[in-house]
Length: 249
Image (cartoon, rainbow, N blue to C red; front, side, top):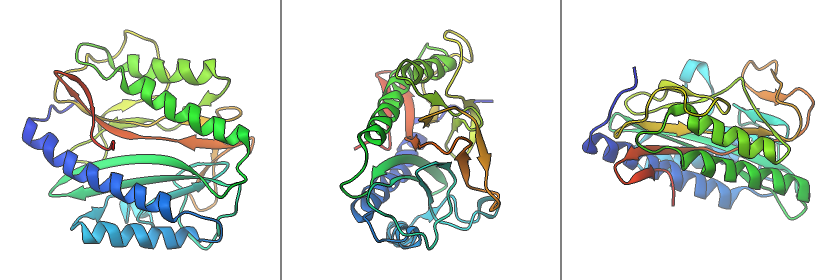
């Protein structure tokens, strides 16, 4: 069942989402060659604590990090650790926060240093633009898979593939609520979108084929062909005046 949030609840989701946005901005400013991903995790932990919130990921099904840090061919759920970033890497960072009983969730992919290949930069740009294409369909009266189709079409028309093993989700009092939001689907199908729905839309886009596999740590998803992957996500409310990006600037 897709829960409908009232204005007060959306405001609380917005408060958590603004913390997510600020943490992502802080990580983006700190991410540079030579820094280990566990140092970025520590920075996120401190920022979340200062905001009197808590990480939604820490301890979730045993996940050890405050944030997810996925490098290059890693798709999602990378565990922060001792690996140091090098110039030319791309780093996907996923942040989820709970405050006052409500959640916000967003992700970005960051260029590290000044030697990121143009092909990687294009992958990042297309992934972010596909999120925008999907978000524009989060309109009252549309159907859920209009979002999915918009993401898939934008990505595949650009020569990339969408990950099919992981999906976006509803969000609110829980980190993961109904509905699941795949990044592929047929237009004009799925539940009708209504005012008060809050959705975490999150295209994961692979440079090569869509297949992924899970590493021995049982968390980190990587592309099977070892080509690059990028990830962007926003928490979005469906309103009378159109989609409201709660994790946006």
